Amino acid sequence: MEKLDRERRAQKGGRPGAWGLAGVATAVAALMPLIFVAALHLGTRTMATGNNDEEETMSVGALAEVRESALSKFVTLKNGLKVHYQESAPSNPAGPALLLVHGGSMSLFSWEPWVQRLDESMHVVSVDLPGHGLTGAPVDFDYSIAAFADFIDLFTRTIGLNKGVILAGHSMGGHIAWRFALAHRERLAGLVLISPGGTTELGGPQGRSAQLVRKPGGALLLRMLFSRDRMAEGLKTVVSNKSAITPGVIERQWEFSRRPGAFEAMVARLRSPSFEPAMVARLNEISLPTLVMWGRDDVVFPVSESAKFAEAILSAKLIIYDQCGHWPAQEFPDQTAADLEDFVASLRSSRS
Image (tube, rainbow, N blue to C red):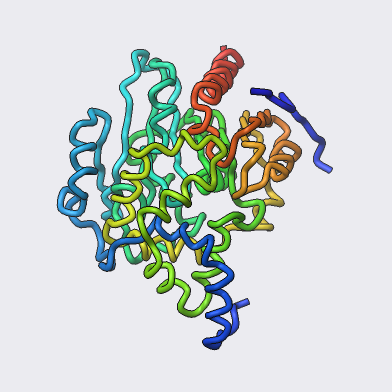
């Protein structure tokens, strides 16, 4: 796999209208081939009412998986939200702490390929964001990027990750990560952005789903049209390496899509702005050592967006992966994990 642009440095240099029935019908016809993205989120008919006991709201398969994992933990934040996360026990307690933040509609389990490959001396923590995975979906959470960044702040302080953290985020998680870095530079040692959002509107099927749920009746259409097959099709659409979408990945996503509040959380998230021009203008304020990873064939956030990060963040190192879609860490786990470990090693050497 070719690595390009090993280290790029640059100097700083409405509200939608109401639709009639005909308009809704036209939109449905146009969006039908891509509406399968809804299946990442659908299945429940019950609104979330807060933080139910996690064992009462897990599916049988998901509960069994968590019970079998020695890494899974739950913590209740001071706002009452019960959060699911996983944490490795490093062989070297002084090793760096790496916090992994997943993308929209995914869960901490999407990081398994990396967790299995990373240096055992690294302290690795991954977390299910509100409305995702096995974390609760509170009805009073606004599911904006700013709110997710505040959640990361509260979560990390609660479990004692206060300083020297390497923050890694994928897709929406990458957007959350760089927003967090702007607000809490002093708490981080490094930043890893994997196909991050925030610099442009959502593309691909996710973008069209976001457009639909902002129209009258759009959320109901998404709820009506979901199926397991559409979910699998949606997952495979955003990757180039189809082998990354295993039957186990599909089954887990299907189960998570049916948890109480998952659909409502998805709609709220898609209705929140994904493109923040005012915040993008502040990217050049990030002075942290930063690794940017991008798939050349990304259909959600095109690889051309990578230049915005490489040029604005003077310390950024950009790696582009050929024959790779929106999920570099899942599509090419060996190469991306090795690149991450090289980045972490460079941080260690710079501090010694």
